[in-house]
Length: 264
Image (cartoon, rainbow, N blue to C red; front, side, top):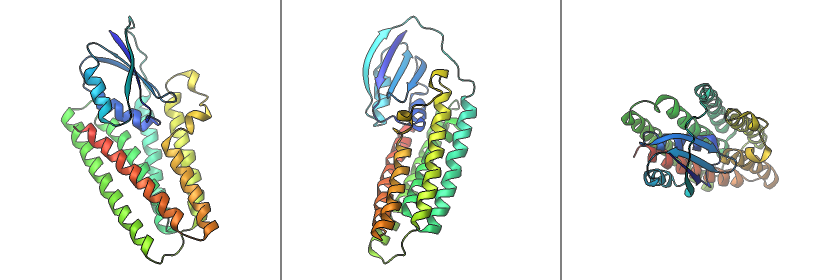
């Protein structure tokens, strides 16, 4: 058996781990996957060449590259019996905040919150596909991934159209206090989700280093919306909210494209 280590620079949260798991699902010869999110490393235990594995990882556009490959005698791997329960937990957290942020975003007039809600929905799709599709037929997995990806792109395009309308129209300023408060709670929810999933890997990781939490794109987005809220109040302008909304919508489309690539 071979042990191949990949560096994946853009793998910075558990939803991307699940994207990779789904992409590699079904490749003959893979015996086990070990993820090290803080250091952006993936270790694949497999039989046969790394060619198909490398191609699948590269298709996700996460910057993956093979660091080394060596022979190993390891045959036993830890089974994470609580993985399904943890996936349900983070799915509920992310989908709940999708509803919260979408509702408060529409009420407060913040496109930043609306865009972030779609980012939460995107993560929900990934966890949902992991729960309902992985382990099922390959056709079922591809169908669900395509449906989720196209739906996500549709929502992001509608969001872009609304951002453009607000750029050129006279609009009431978004409620900056709602933006900040809701984003703080969303940040805590993202950090807690990351903590739950990382804690399941080993007791050594249970303490959850701060550097692990703040490398997550989701947390960076939350900080961006908080900053936009402060700037809305400081500059008395809705432009910071529209700018952060545009950035997040782009990230949502990027995530949707990765989901679609699972269905290839």
